[in-house]
Image (cartoon, helix red, strand yellow):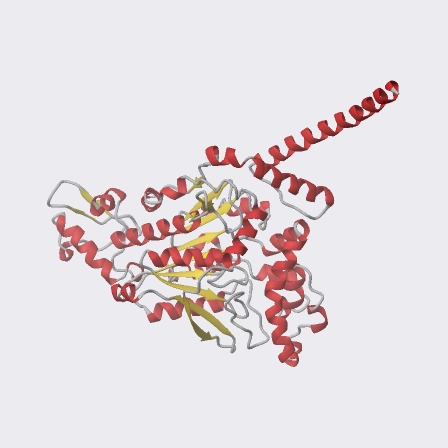
Length: 497
């Protein structure tokens, strides 16, 4: 009897020991996965799913560590210029980010974001614009209080939000940024593409879907806002797909851009590479995103099937769509005139030449982005090397369109960084380019007072040229202007004191 018990005990010990070793190994692997600077989230295979789950466990186990030691210094890169230095000096958020300790994991962050969207209040009233082809696009304007409206005038700056894939201002990233800009006294308009709007639908009225580049519709909205408020400077923030569309607008319009400053958040560069990567890595997420775009279109198809067939969309294929690649190839591309040419369509939707960007643009990205491919992320982060107007910031943490801070995730780092950037750009324009529309006529008054306090009247200020300068009567300091007619950094700093 005793020998049997001893044999049983030895057998149990022989089984428990390998299990403990396995548990310790998996625990160590979860910690390692969580601490990696770049984590490739994937559910495509069982091994990839296991690694993703281990990462999630590590993120939860390390909550105390991230609370005390989670603060990071984002990778901030730009070409040196007086304009960039002026902006960076007024954007402290770009130099520090402390993500919420219990929201390190992108899947958990997405779940919390979706839950918050259900409780997000409706602050908006809609204005519908008719495109030349008959399609409807929408501008959702933030409803300010009566006191705030009374404080605004025709020069109040406008923040134009270019929404996420199929989003509207009720989607949390868009809504939070709109709300924070509105609190700072901006007029706020959120762009809702044709057939988009998860919580505030802008339904299809034509068989044409919105386009990946969306240049025509977006330009129509920007022109409308600029005509409605001709003396107000416009800044813009674009999230994900909206960020790519904003970048395309700024690059294609160049010096004619009616947007004075742009913030591009987690936007891919090459559509085909991003879509293929997402379809392969996280099929379930790709399916969900494709359905958010497709379902409103199916509602239109049920009412007007003959119009859809006329533009080359095969209705039989629409119900078999299970990924973003399917959605673009079988619905979006043919409805935009590229039947059977999905790859050609995606290539035709690439943003304009980045060298043509003529206004300050902040490019935000994160190494923990589970939607954008790593190749696209790395190429995005190098845009600043080709253009002095681009500032690149890469976070190590956060995830796609989400950068929460605070123990209760009550702060949005993206919103704060965007506000600081746009405000700094407008202030720079106010000082260095007083006669431009971007600075507004009210800004000229501000610059005039700055010059008078230094002993120079507007009448005696020089015309801008590559070599123009003026000697200030109150000191021997020289007010120099560069070839773009911008004041030197030292003069701008003095003028703002």
